[in-house]
Amino acid sequence: MKNATGTLCIVNGKLFIGNDQPAVEQGCLIATDGIIQYVGPADGAPSLAHLPAASILRIDARGGTIMPGLVEAHFHPTYFNVAALEDLDIKYPVEYVTLLAAANAKLALECGYTAARSGGSLFNIDVWLKKAIENDIVVGPRLASSGREICGVAGLMDWNPDYRKIGMEGLVLLINGADEARGAVRKLVKDGVEWVKTYPTGDAAAPDVNDHHTLCMTFEEMYAVVATAHNHGLKVTGHCRATEGIKNALRAGYDAIEHGTFMDHEALDLLLARNVPVVPALYFELMSVERGPEFGLPPKVIEGHQETLDGGAESARMILKAGGRLGMGGDYGFAWNPHGDYAKELSFFVNYVGFTTEETLRCATKTGAEIMGRDKEFGTLEVGKLADVLVVDGDVLADIRLLEKRERFIAVLQGGIVKAGKLSRP
Ligand SMILES: [Zn+2]
Image 1 (cartoon, rainbow, N blue to C red):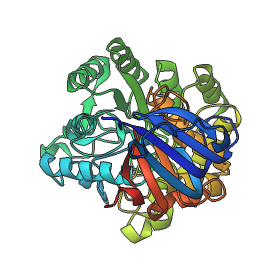
Image 2 (cartoon, rainbow, N blue to C red):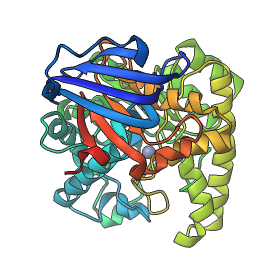
Image 3 (cartoon, rainbow, N blue to C red):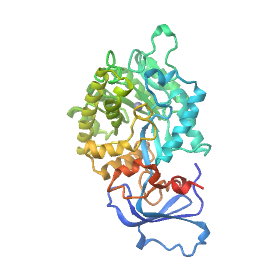
Image 4 (cartoon, rainbow, N blue to C red):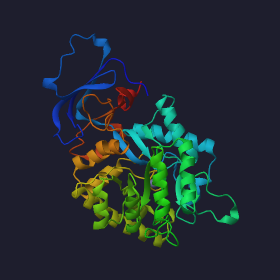
């Protein structure tokens, strides 16, 4: 992805840096060729008087907020208003889903998300979407890809009955035993993914045989995934709700945990021992409970989502309090939790789970970049990092819900280039 050329100067806003430093009133950010050179009070900023005025892009934050671009840590670029499981894999051909994924990536950037980590994708699309974004062919968040997911045969993601003979290849690699687990990872290595996404446990969405307390992979399979992935330099994560599944993942050497719903103290100790990040993706559960009836979700499924919501909120509070790391991402792309609503996850963590705004924003920026393994490049506004910046008309620290309102975005910048927001319009 190309950086800007010339000088960028953003002034007249409260500066949220993204680390533990307090926000700076009347802040200023200066970048040269897309790399941050100064962040701090406008008073102490270096003079740009020696530069030709035409070479400087000046942005007035209008007394609002200057903050790091957001990181969506559990992004499904290929999900598009999924209302039933079948919508996830066989509804559209790869050609159409690829176009949908490009549209979702553009939308995420317009929503202030300058980076995103895929939580699984159909047909290896995110690997190629990432290349297209990196080559400036389409706009979107800086992406970490994960391609197809891995699940045990008859587990959560294996819903097409055998008599239909259509398999699940577009969405998931199904395995039986450690040998097949290794084979599946090797396929993904060749596909070019960065993260291997697995399904150690079930979910409230499948209450009959794969509910949120069911295991969908064995420890041996998970360990084989990790050993093979790590050998090739890939990271491993997994959809982990059941307590035993979380522990299996942590003992097998997983690099991140998705959801981490039903944590107990032993699971917390295992998590903290290696400082493994967790991405709860919880607003989806609230929406499933509140809007499920509208979309015909059975009562048993909604009850399961309520239990997941309560358990997940409790676990997230426990992890944050113990000093663990949480990323913000939200499983968006379902009919009742559509793409574009990403920042509702952040308001939810403040207003429902009880995090402070600063804690939530750090999870959504700094920790997100750490999870992607790119915290030296972005995630905070610090000298030497990319000018991936969100400029908001209004005080986000006073009201995090401003991030839900795209019309309040003055500019969304990647590498110092305005890609979205009011200033991007002709
Ligand atoms: Zn997901």
